[in-house]
Every structure is written in structure tokens, then in C-alpha cells.
Length: 52
Image 1 (cartoon, rainbow, N blue to C red):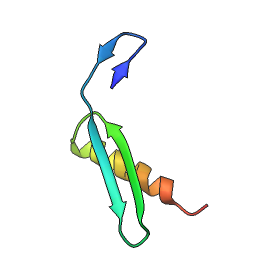
Image 2 (cartoon, rainbow, N blue to C red; image 1 turned 180 degrees about the horizontal axis):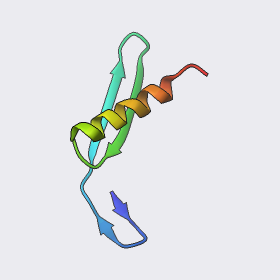
Image 3 (cartoon, rainbow, N blue to C red; image 1 turned 90 degrees about the vertical axis):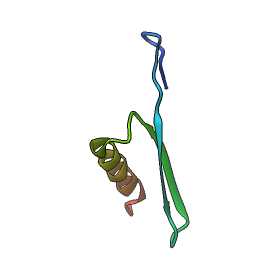
């Protein structure tokens, strides 16, 4: 991932979740595979599939 405002380039990890029963797939880039990053990605995935 690149921060264009300061020209910094950082490697990113990709979080991918697949919910088999609904055929729903969620993917996003995150900075690491640390537990806080994983939990935050999981929370965003659950928020994205929340019924409206």
C-alpha cells in the first residue's frame, strides 16, 4: 500500500473471509496479521454483511 501524500510504501496483508452458506466473500488490506488487526477486519466484515 502506498501513502501518496508522503511517498511511503508499506507492505500489506490481505484479510479474506468467505461465508460458505451465503456465498459472501469479504476482502480488505490490513497492515499486519496481528490479533488487533485481525479482529478489526473481522468486525468490519460483520458490519458489511449486517442486514439493513
